[in-house]
Length: 266
Image 1: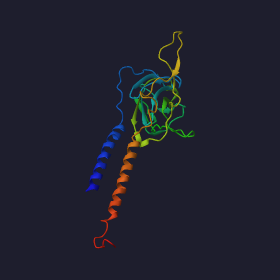
Image 2: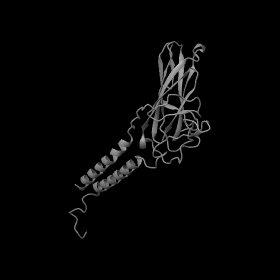
Image 3: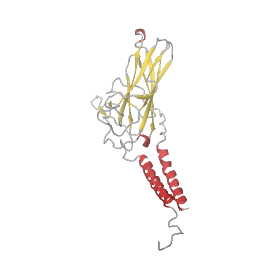
């Protein structure tokens, strides 16, 4: 009876601990468009247009242009970048590509998604997607693992006929993230984000020149906002269950004690 009560209390503690952990690992709601989304894109890494996650950015350009945006990503997030290119009414076969780079301008591999697509002749639009790997808290110097900081999105056409060069196009880009949590947590963290993006501040200084500043966006609680993750909860619960299993095994193998048929003085 005592073992039953102990196991019941342990299962209750497990349920209480798993509740917050499951809630933390759910995807965060996407921000709604409030009319302040960017309507233009940069032409290089230094002039990349800053966008927030959950924000739909638009831009107009010409085939052959390089369109750049930048967004922040923190530890435990798995960003998904989606882009839609609206093409002119008449055009030949075109291949468009979506690339994502980290703060050190290292091209990041996509877990899955149509990163390059070919639009057949007369197609009205083409959709691209790239699901990045989960952002880590630290990495070996030789690795190219995604780290917290600024990420750059580059959208361009990589194959088209000479007659289609310079035709007007419009693009839409959106970045969303899923909070993976302790499922991908690792020990260690960065004190500062990985080389924050350099971007041109909106507006001009008093002397009429544009100012290049460090990227001003990021998490409200700071980058890599602490050592805590739900992995600590599961580690504690696992330790409790292991201890209870040891106690239960001892009680079951201990037996009823001294046999009744043995004399007391034996």
